[in-house]
Image (cartoon, rainbow, N blue to C red; front, side, top):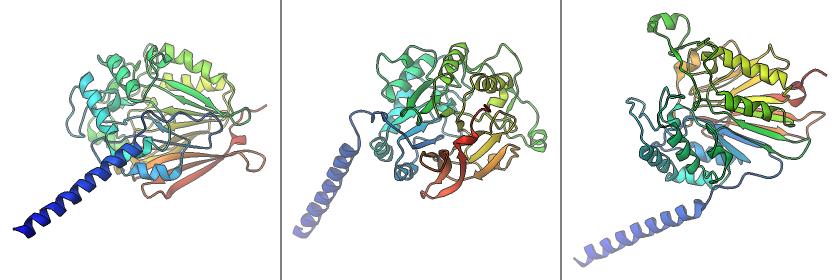
Length: 375
């Protein structure tokens, strides 16, 4: 009997020690507030999308190893409206609960304590698979989203229609502008593709949408378009424009800018009119990584896609993309934009897809001198 009591006491003490250590670890890695954005130069910008918040997210340790100056969450940071098999309607309380579930993950807490975040959303963290301007909880979702990411009470993001955001980092000569677009809050209706799966398969289409050519249908909304134009006229050497969905590729019929061809062309025209040099597009959503490039532009316009922080889809990656220049990589991944300001006559931008084990899946080097308008 005495031996049993002794063994029980040892086991109890061991479990108590583990619990105490876990509690101390949680307290040590969770800051009271989000880390502030850097004030000076930035050279390492990580980004990613599509993370099921109920799954273990080993990818965060890989991101921590990259030592980014900032991490951009560009869509589907949670899956609030589905478990991947069944969809449901969200409430403001359920949205808060799902964001809190992400906040409670130790691996996410380690990331939050390691680098600052900027964020925008896609459909699942917005709260509706096909959600757009008609989503009845869009105001509540905006409030919950901004609460989660620690947006100040008087912030302009709390007063505008949508969560778009921008910031310029670094001094003249090394300015990096980060622009986060909101492709949900003002999005007009998409057109469903009712063709059979066999017909779509023969055409290489994996999605469920057709292009909407109605000139009255918007993707960003007039308020955001006006804001974006002002941002693009601000001086910066490098501009990273983040969209939750792909912009350059438009063949798959997925949730992409190609479903709104007039809005897509409006974006390209705006970049041209503003002579916005140094632009690289950062996109997500498709559950694999690739780099696409638009060559019929004043300079090579790259669309760097990173998607699949907890899950990927091989069938999506197999579909043709005539604009692809790197990839695809089908594996858990995040993206890294690394800027070497000191190399040669022109800064060199490294676009890297980072695997779960921290290795580079593929890399593309882009001299900043190539991303300039002819003088």
